[in-house]
Length: 204
Image 1 (cartoon, rainbow, N blue to C red):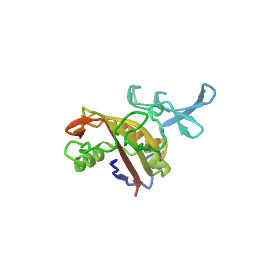
Image 2 (image 1 turned 180 degrees about the vertical axis):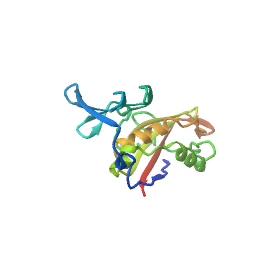
Image 3 (image 1 turned 90 degrees about the horizontal axis):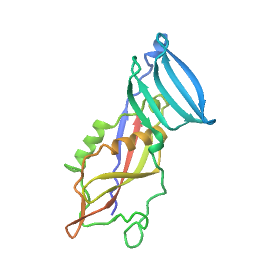
Image 4 (image 1 turned 90 degrees about the vertical axis):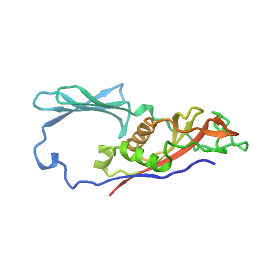
């Protein structure tokens, strides 16, 4: 039986940002890469240092996004191309995936260290609601699937229903940080197990 948890993360929206209350110290430049990718750069007016570089195709974020400090040092990076979208996972009649051979029904399901309550704590501590999603009022549920292998290592294999690329990327990023689980077992022998995790992002 596949596990199906709803993990909820909420943030409070602020009525006005600091930028709205005064004159912005930032400027913006837009250029094009590879004919179809729009690159938006935000820079400091006082020294022209780039503080963020974002890429889009239409309104969809793509490629690598970077953030820099006031001295031009890289502080954060997001690679939207690493997120993979897949069809809704389905088990065959023999309960084994015909593509990747992951078991979906086992005697002992995989367990996050400390159980579900610790999984909630881990995700609550590590999930960062994307600022772009907050600004645009974007919320929703990201449905991910992954595999806990024989060693307890989690690997995200795809998103079968996304909410928005901003939220999809954040959900993927956090799952990549997970520690080793206790692996699932059949007859006491560790096996690879498919595991589904829906993560809900809400704005209050």
